[in-house]
Image 1: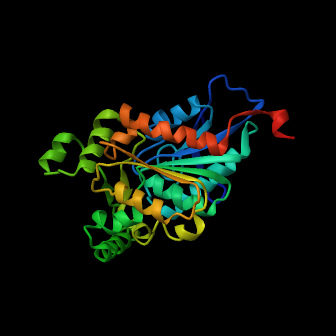
Image 2 (image 1 turned 90 degrees about the vertical axis):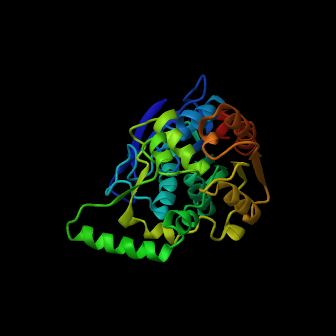
Length: 318
């Protein structure tokens, strides 16, 4: 693995990424590449890198696991902005970087998005035609989630409050930062949390895979654009890329089950697969061996079918 950074060409900061290489990597060969995107509140070192990125690299792909702008080790101010438009553009910048690598075949690039990044990856793939294959793992339409549970089913009231907070910050008051995840399982239980997804998030981020780069937070005043965004807008027309959507059959408050069903039905792609992992909840698909095994059992053949295997440089240029 190699850690790199490269310029976000439309902004003024760098994007950080880990490149995972296949076994017996030869930089004189051309490899298919998969870009992996971390969940909301996460970072490249977690599920996108240490689970799916590692497995896809072992299967023969060059994998680029990146931190979104304003998050993890990537640049951008203010920190922890969860802006879907910015997140979608990040995919384009990572593709821009990938096509400059001499060992990446620019015509064989795929993406994996996990949780909210599943929605971002779906949206990015509609208009970024250099992406040739798409996988969503327990993907969530962040806009839909924010209009519902994240706003207490009062999106207008939330946007009014966000506007007031932004005015206060413009006048010099301290920023308000929303923390997505309780600080401990005890804190979650004390607060009366019963939702399987919130409990799963708490266990994952506070116990199973602790990482200082995982912010698990968002700047409240910069969130109105998320409320007005829809990951699936125009999917019936523009989402023609081969796609696999993977989610568990244990629905929780974040809505990956319903979103997975919806995008599978709406996508215009003639080559699409839906994998419902029995007995799995949202966060079990991040790192638990059996759900992850079942996800990869379908994902790896999907990418091999649509992106192929490595070739020699000589073969690739003829």
